[in-house]
Image (cartoon, rainbow, N blue to C red; front, top):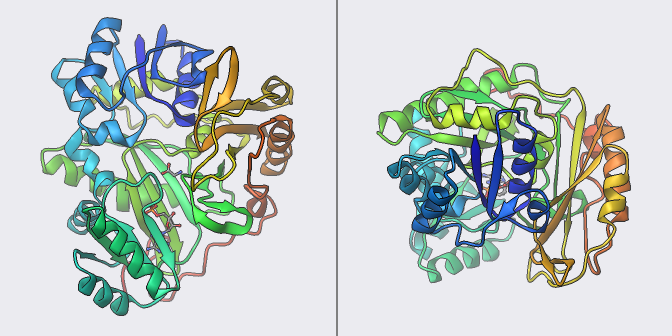
Length: 437
Ligand code: AMP
Ligand code: GLY
């Protein structure tokens, strides 16, 4: 089959790389792609969130399947336009993409489907914000209701900071969701969904803060690893039973079936597993780590999901190796990343054993690869365990030359040392996933 991948980032480079190793895939195109994707397949310069432009391109290329990577085109209805034109799409339509597009909508769906999550209130005035902050107490969690590229959430002990973040969202014309604070390690789980059925991928952990030891502001994600040796047995099955299937059923019942990746952002709390958020697409950089271990042909899997024909009896197959992904970000990311600097050392990095490099914010300029975004590259290391994968990935990262760049040195470090422990379940909580007490 011929596949068109929409999006510009590291996630899309990792998807393209996996598709190229799928024997069922004959040709891959990408739009707009980046410098790394352009080394592998033909790229096309279009506005990725323009439904008409994407549909025209897919028709011209005679694509059998379109894979939509980022949330913005999904929320803009690109998948709907493609389906109307009779083209198979991996990605939800506009209505189902609201699971990510509106945090308030996601909370309504979770309430209807009885999915465990933080208690919350939606606020549209400063008075409602103040009341909700007092009701839940500190630390305060204030979320922009709409899409904010990973920067819409503020978790803070400071009431003033919480109030001013909410005010910023109101000034931009939005509303906010205020939540109770949930404490515990976070897990990202991707479920591949065909509208009625779902199969899980392997859990991964993301590192959202910019600096080591989870210091500094939130980013889109600075690194990831898989597997998670510290997870309780039965974790994935429980999440499928208590979160993914109820949400899929709820969305199908509303007449807006969910096709694509349901990304469950989860916290392991003393009351069991709780949903932090849903995304309606693969996570970045978790995808770079997860797909590095996937053995099942990705294109065939996505096509089956797009056609509503997922085989849920067959498990996906995975390499037993561990994968650690480390993001190399531009100087001054996440505020105002510097751009346009030359990047060298990529061949040397890829020559390191068990290492490959995924591009995100890169472009070709006069024959040179230069930085063009906040998260510039993800280096991925595979090894027999997390410790070896860590050694390898950082060997690769040290080869990369990009002036002013920054990366975290502690990706997967605690897990490799066996120092991540889910908090003990409070008495009365159900095993693994606890009910509100
Ligand atoms: P989100 O965009 O909803 O994933 O939030 C970004 C990050 O903020 C999450 O990965 C968590 O680290 C943190 N966060 C979000 N909601 C909560 C919550 N209710 N309690 C504690 N931390 C949270
Ligand atoms: N890594 C977090 C995300 O993709 O939203």
